[in-house]
Length: 432
Image 1 (tube, rainbow, N blue to C red):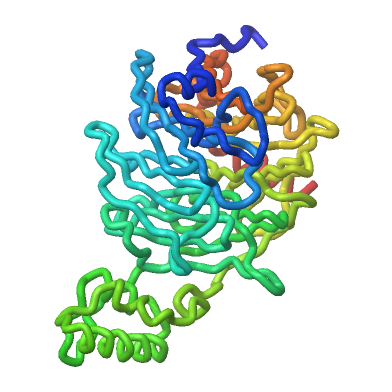
Image 2 (cartoon, rainbow, N blue to C red):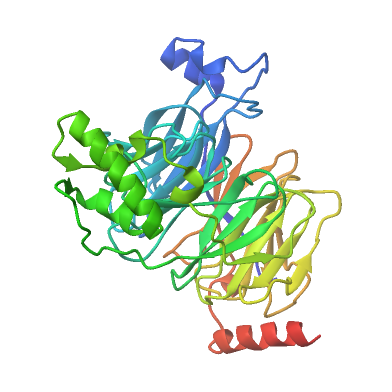
C-alpha cells in the first residue's frame, strides 16, 4: 500500500457528564442500574451531496422499553454542528434524497421526519400494531414515487411510507418464521430500486421484489376515499379489500364522516396478516448468528453483502440462494457493519467489534483484506463511504466518536474496466 489512511476529523460524541451539565436532569441516565460514560454511535448517514452527516446516539443494553432521551447531531464538513433531542434512543437515520429533512427511527419504533434547518418535526408515526412497536433498524429509498420510504424493525415488519405523512404506512410485509415473526436487523435496496434485501435476528436473509404500487380508482359506495386510503385498499387482496371497505364505511357512518381515510381503515383492527402479507421472493443461505448489516453494491443490481455476529461476511448474487464468497478475516470477532465504495465497484469496508475496519479490494484479492484501519480497545458501530467525496470513509464507534478518514488513492480511482472485471470475478467464483 503506497500510503496510510489519513484522519481528517474526529467528531466527538456527547459525554454523559456534558449532558448532565447542560440538561440538569437524571432522566437521561436511568438505564436499569447500568453506568455508562458515553452514548454510543447507533446510526449515521451522509446527505446526498456528501457535505453533511448525521450521527445518532444511544445507550447500550436495552432490555425492553427505552425510557431515555437521546440526541442526534448534524455536522457539516466545516465541523459546524447542530444538536437535536429525541424521545428515546436513536436506532436509524436517513436523509431524504434531495431534501433538507432527516428521517429518524427510535428504539421504541417511532419514526420522525425532522426538518434540520428549522428544527421542526414535519411528521411522526405512532407505536401501533400496524406501525412499528420495536426498534427501527433500517431505512431505504426507492428512486421515485409518492411513497419512496421503506423501514424495517425488530418487530418483524417492513413498511412503506409517504415521508410527508407518517400517520400510517400505505403497505407492508411481514417477515414470518415457522411460528412467529422474524425481527429485521437491516434493510438495503438494490441498485435498480427493484428489490429489498432484508436480514434478521435469526441469521436469515431474504429478498423482497417491490411490486408496482396500484393507484387505480375504486368504487366508493357513497363515501369518498381519501387518496392514501385508496392506495392502501388498492394494494390488498380484492376480497379482503371489500370486507375492509365495508367496515370502514360503517365506522364513517357512525361517526358522521363523509370521507374514508387511513385511520378509518385501521380502526376496526383488521387481520394484520391480510394487511401485510408475507410475500418474500427468495431466502438466501443463512448465517449462524444474527445478521448485523447488509449493503447492496451501487454498481451491480444483483450484488450484495451481509455480515453477522458469527464473524463472517457473505457476498451474494441476488439471483442465487447460495453465497458466492464467505469471508472470515478475524477469528473470534464479530462483524458489525458493512459498506460498499461509491466509486470503486470492487471495494468494500467492514467493521469489527475489535475496533478495526478492514477494506477489501476484490480486484486485488478475492479472499484477503488489503488494508486495516485499527482503533484498539474500541468497537466499530457503523461505517459509510461518502457518496460524492470519493476518498472519504466515515467510521462511528461505540465510544460515541466518529472518525472521518481520507483513503489512499488506490481506493478512489476506478479501474477503467472495473465493471467488466466485477462480472468476470463473479463468474469465476461461481465456477470454482
